[in-house]
Length: 333
Image 1 (spheres, rainbow, N blue to C red):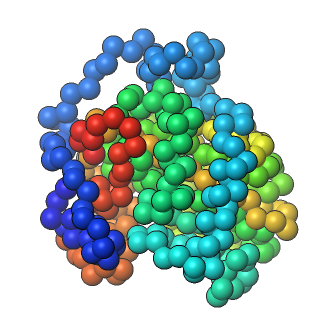
Image 2: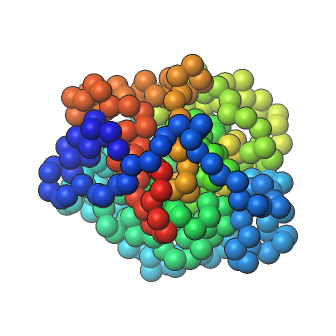
C-alpha cells in the first residue's frame, strides 16, 4: 500500500485503530502470473456447484441461489441500517448516498432519502454479511480460496418521486474497478425482502460477461441521475433481458462484465438489498490511463481530495485501503 493510501486509511479511521498489516506485492500485469488449470473459464472446481450450475454461469454470467441468507441475519442488517440512518452510530469511511429528488425517507433525521450505504467495511454488523460462510463457499467457486471483500453496499431503493431517478442505468461493474483479472471478481447480491418488477428488481443481459468493458458515463435522463450511477453508452434497450425476481434471502452471484441495472421502484415501500464485490487476492492493480475508466478515476480522486484533502491518492489507493481479507491469504490486492 502506498504512503498516500496509508494516510487515507488513517484519516478515515480517525486514527483510532492500527493500520491493517498488508504485505507489499508487485502491481503490474507484467509481473503477475495466474494460470490454474481450469477446464471451464469462469468457475473453479470446488465440488459445490453442480455441472449444470457451472455451465449455466459459464453461458449466462450469473447464478441465483435460493434462500441462502436467513431471516434472522437480514433483520440484523436492517436494524443496523436504521441505526445508521438515525445517526446513532458513526461508521468511519461510510458513504451515505441520497436520491437526487426525494425529500423524505424512512429512519432519516434530516428528511433526505438515503438511497445507498457504500463502503460499510468498518461497520462490524453490516460487514458480517461479507463473512457469512454460506456466501463465501459460493464466492470461492469464482475467485478461488484467497478472497478479498473489495466493495460493499446496502441499497435502499426509494419509491420513485415521478422523475424516474430510482432507476439504475444499465452498466458493467468492472467500470469501477482498477484490478484484474475480471474473471476472478464476483458480486454477491442478496434481497432483503421480496424483489420484483414493481419495486425495481435487477435486470441482466445474459451472456454479456463474455464481452469487453464498454464506455460508461452519466446518462442524459430527464430528472437527473444519482451520483456515481454511470451507465453504458450506446445501450440498446431492445436487447433480450431477464428480470431477476427474488424472495427475501435469495442471492445472485454475477460477473463484473455482465450488463445489468434496475428499474424504477413503483411501490410505496423501500426495496432493500445488501451486496459485496469479492476478488481473488491474487488479482493485481492496473493503470486506467488512456482507457474508458479515466472518467470514474477522476471522479473518485476528486471526491477523496474534497473529503480528505489528499491530492496524491491514486485510484488503486482508494481500493487498497477498503479491501479486507475474508478467507485465505492476502497476496497482491
